Length: 110
Image (cartoon, rainbow, N blue to C red; front, top):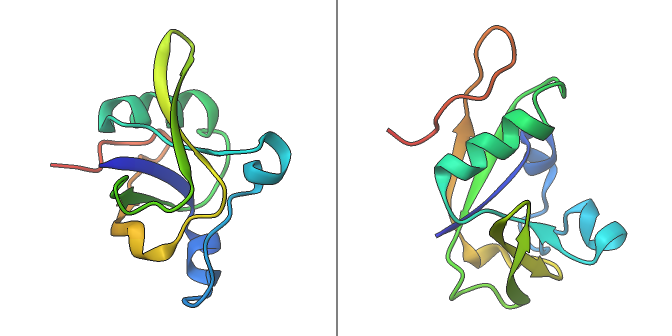
C-alpha cells in the first residue's frame, strides 16, 4: 500500500468518472506519496501542519496504478511518486486524517 494525502474538500469534489490529478503533476511532474504510515505522519506535520482544514489519506494499491510509479530518494528516504493522473480503481481505502486542537496530525491507523 502507498499513501497520498490531500484536503478532504478536494476529494469530496472529485468526479467519480474522472482520474484524480494532484496539482503537483502539473507543477512537478508527479504526485507525492509515501510508503509508510509513520513517514506520512512525519511529512504531514513537517509540511502541512499550518494548512487549516480536514485532510484525507488515499490508500493506493500500487499494482493497480496505471501511471508510472517511481521510488525516488528525497530527504535521505525513498518515496513513491506517481507520474500522471491516478485511476480511481487504485484507491482501495480512504482514511480520515485526524488532527489535534493545535493542528498536529495524528496517526490514522490503529
